[in-house]
Image (spheres, helix red, strand yellow):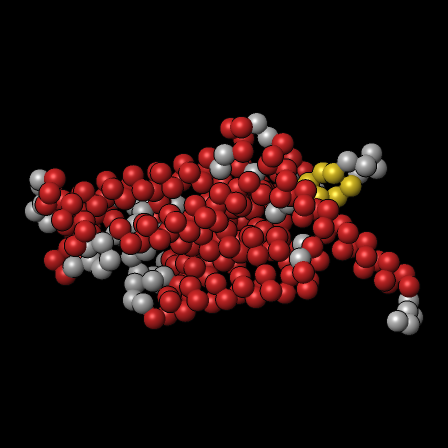
Length: 291
């Protein structure tokens, strides 16, 4: 092969080598932690907390519809596991609003915590089951990759932005669910793959196409099935891509020939503070436009 510019070939080889070293280091770093540090405890804590919160609200809904004994409560939950029955619609809505669902009118009247609480609420067994399954599958891996604190930052910020997006573009919708934050995790991982694409076969093309396919399928389902808040999904996905670009691991070699993660919060804490401040300003802007 005739090479017109050998330096460009060397530069490409260097970038590929850096990407591979960074990718391998990111995947292996969690093994250097203590036994407790290797556990994705933030993911498991969110999963357990969200599941227990759903059990509590499901119990409240069952009681509101007249189910008081254990067998009738279980029957009510199973009857509404996939699709809420007509007789339970009002009770479910009332309970979810009482415990923090996204309701634009209440947010505009000062209940600003509703930009956060909806990501821990779910409507029925299918809703909480699918979301928690996705969270465990993706979250346990991504938390090991980015660390506990960065994972929590990405999950909460993308979850809040997903609710802000729903507030701005779907003001009439009463919204609950962790799916916006989970889309945020997908976005963050997608940018990790983009940054390290040279470490994958064929420049990461197939990995990226697979992620695009998964996102497309999930957004497509939201267009077909009623009561799916795609604005929240898109808000979570886009904000996850931004946070992934800023905070997913990127290892570089120092002059002492050691590897450091240049995206860790110890180096990027000013950007993390600006991210939190920017999220607050985005919420304030949405409130001003919603008035």
